[in-house]
Image (cartoon, rainbow, N blue to C red):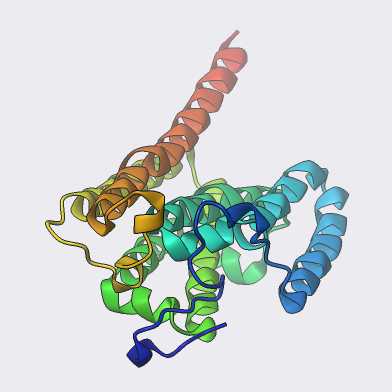
Amino acid sequence: MAGGANSGIWLPYCGAAPDPAELLTRWNFDPLLVIVLLAASLVGYRKARSIGTGTPFAAAMATLALLFVSPLCALTSALFAARAAHHAILIAVSAPLLAWSLPDWRAVQKIPLTPAAVLHAAVLWVWHTPALYAAALSHDAVYWLMQATLLGSAFAFWSAVKRASVTAAVGALLGTMVQMGLLGALITFASAPLYAPHLLTTAAWRLTPLHDQQLAGLIMWAPAAALYLAAALTIAWRWLHEEGRAAA
């Protein structure tokens, strides 16, 4: 599906930008993608079920299917706001579900929390630079490199959070929330559209490219960042609850 960046025609992996009337018909049944998702589901579910985490693993795979098979995939070709939601689900829903439901990997266990948090933030910021984002929507290989590094760095981060002390985990989550909010704010308050692949794809959705970009920034600034805050509050609440029970 990829097209050349110099041709002036953006043909991302998820296909050409749809209009509202055709969106619900735009499912992505790429055979290789379906095979990979099914194989990963079968192998991963057996491992997760062996440690009693089959349900969260199934939920993780369901979110990946939502992101890459459902019409949301096509919508990300049209709207940067949809891409922001896509990335938020990938790194703050799919990744923690996988981290909590799969046995710890030795390679991931070696990554301390602070480097994992820095890597997670760096990957997020790098892929939201206009040039690299445009490249990802121009070439399938770059697109999948973006998805793999976003998910991989997020998985490493959430795995490190899972292993860390309560104080360290909460601190890392709050720090990640702040940097994501900052990125969202910078995108929201940009005075001009930054992302060339969406300059001609938003009109069918009754949005200007700038309004679409502002909506994307708000998604990153508020609901996406709030997922990290919710995780921090959940960890802190569970710790306080356990401390209260121990003291009773």
